[in-house]
Length: 329
Image (cartoon, rainbow, N blue to C red; front, side, top):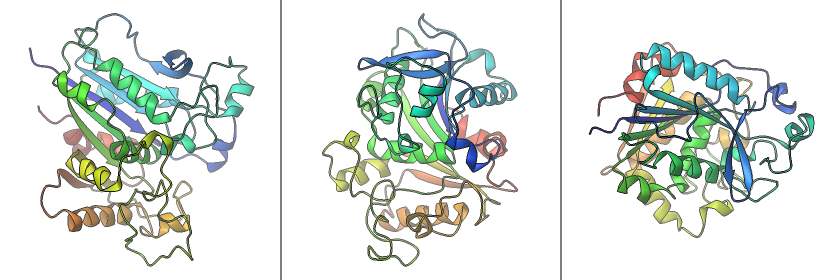
């Protein structure tokens, strides 16, 4: 039996929102729970995933950005699934990474995982109740979806994200992979789609713009480099991290018009600006960097989406985005 496509869609912004909103408690808490190491992650589901789903041919996991509005993204992906005419065969999942202020404002139980500000974007451990990495949450979702008794027709997983969600995808592709062996055993291929992130993690101290540790002390520290790695990464050496990363099937989707140097959600730290002035050039610089270091054996591609700026909906519903996300097996 042909195993169908699983798409993990991690996205931060279908529509750009004001930066002040991230400092407030979220309006909505996702209704579903996933038990992880004695704690619970919050998430939204388009349908239950407790019983076997032989009709499901695609799973889209949409990861919110800095505003933590997971249910908004769940609804956005429902619309995208309808446009793709794959809605009836698709399970949609939207994990939610909460802040302490969300726990207090919504009187949530102590068992609910929460993080300090945007630290979950880089794989940091939760501030409570257990030291669970945000990347471990993704591992647990992958592990559940790789259960052939629940999802017997799985063929391919695509982990994709836009903007802040794309930052998660890029770093997770770099130091994740705890479930790779399990997915391989089940015959499930894994792909990544990284769309319009503000920054990337580099493998050494080379940057397209002049920078030094004196002028920008953290430019080569995680999440921008491989120094001071998060606990989740374990003891893997940088050379092995790079070796594994370049083997991954990754597509970088960049909006042709994502060139606003003053975009409110653009990372303007010196560490990010060392990678370029705006998102389009940062993505092009990073891909050129990879090609220079790996002229052979790079299993990755760069796709420019014409007439689209920093808009996740525009990126993923474009002909280029659809071709990447839903390309034939």
